[in-house]
Length: 188
Image (cartoon, rainbow, N blue to C red; front, side, top):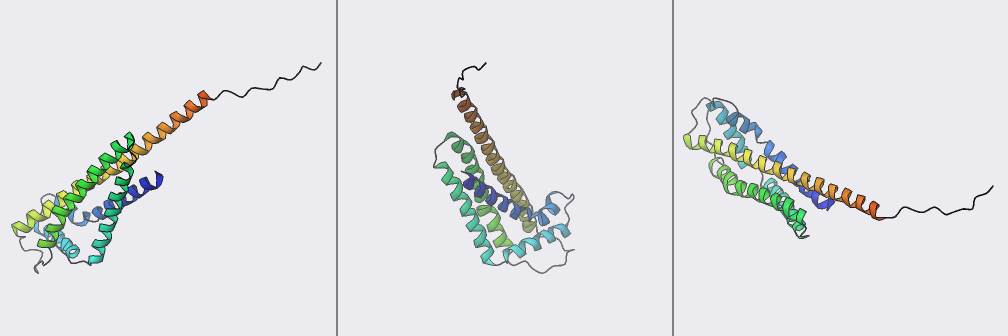
């Protein structure tokens, strides 16, 4: 159990860290008001760098995601109630993140940002690109929250199992009779 939980936590933390690197672009578009064209071009340039990056990085991230899904599914095989509740929720959140990233983020990045036209930062951002940048930032935030939920569920599982172990230890101590002392004759 400990190795499986450690793998899930490490994979989830890695993916959260990967999403946090998008903060370079997302903080300018989600949290700075009003959003101006310079911020949007900065975000577009950032996503263009990702779209034109080496494919090996994408394969490595895909392998790490596959490791995380496999490990969570492996935990469900035990069939215990704690595994079904905590790992079931973790699978839902993890798969939601994978689905959103695979069907929303990656296609947008690879279709709109692969060939970004040269531009000065003072030019107006095309409306299609502007809405895509804002959608990417929102989806990255949703994925980050979902992965944080996976970490929370794994922490809850650890706490619940450690509380059960403590209860089992107390019950075993109550059931074990106290050792008796050997009677010795009184000496005068």
